[in-house]
Length: 451
Image (tube, rainbow, N blue to C red; front, side, top):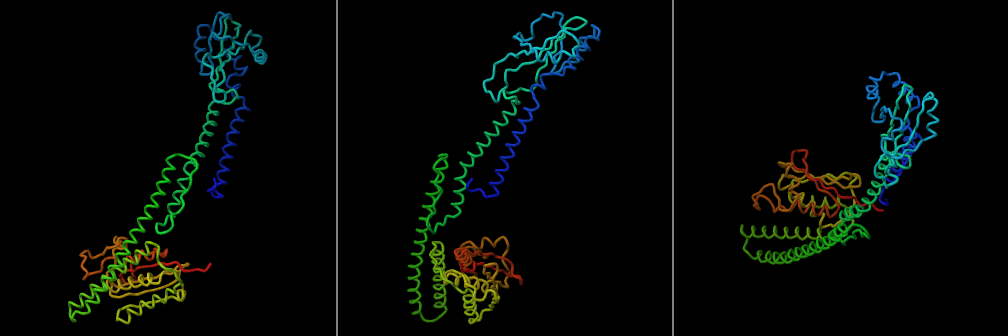
């Protein structure tokens, strides 16, 4: 109940109140309409009409009339012996009050009205079961001779409270359902809390506190404990992997730098240039891996950056080298600040610009602010990216060109690094179509807003 909203609480109160009013109204209806009396007692005029009809019917046709009058409520029969015992063989109780109410309509005929119990085991559950069931037996002496017997049985079982047995069962079932609903809510509430807690798990951060359940099923306790152990193991595994990757990248980069210095001693020529290019690619790949490991381990630095200046700097560097690149920055994005790692964000812009130049021949950058977000778009004029490959290209080591030759493309880490770094800054990366037919990469970063 504590986690329900105000609207949910009000709705639950209204539903419970309506159910209670509904049950009370039905019970009051049956009580006020005397259900048992209506089903057991036929109208005095009806009994008199039956007796008069039998008297006026010739003897040879009376059995036909008796068969026509029988129903699941009325059992009509004729007897010649007026002293015959009651049909059930049970002791009957003459009801003097009912006899006085029927006497005027029976026009002086001798008659008795008795309550005759129906044989059977007496129920023991007072509210939900029927009381000892009885039926009324009318024994009327006909003016033409013989005895008319009319048995009137109630088709509805009545409880000692005067209510139908089905209503009592319905009330009991409603109470059981309500208790079951409350119990189910209490048992499943820890699972809801666990789901919310799991969504907040950050393997690179401090382990979060999972819900503590004092009571409940053992399976719930076991599940929460298992998730707690899983969180700890995954966090340790991630930190160990990132630490190992960072150490390997750092050491290999050191050896690559030494190798680069030795390559400078090689006489100038095509082989020397290719060796330098390979070593530069290897160092850049290691730098990307190291930067990605820092992002995955939550070790990126945070500072306030004017993102437009960073974008301009990357564009000017490439423009000075003769690249076909340009940038448009909206007025609302000038001096807009983001909170993030300078090196990581520069690598994002660098990778996107280089990809556009390498695969699309040109790069057109645009920066604008929209709804507390900074939106960077990078368009090229290449062949574009097929829709079915757009999500896949954001994964590591995936390229459109599948030969894996370094002459036709990189290692397939550029966009994966971009996605990891942007998501570490709580941003998003999407791939679409550029207006001129090439690919468009859109990056959204949250603007820094002072509290």
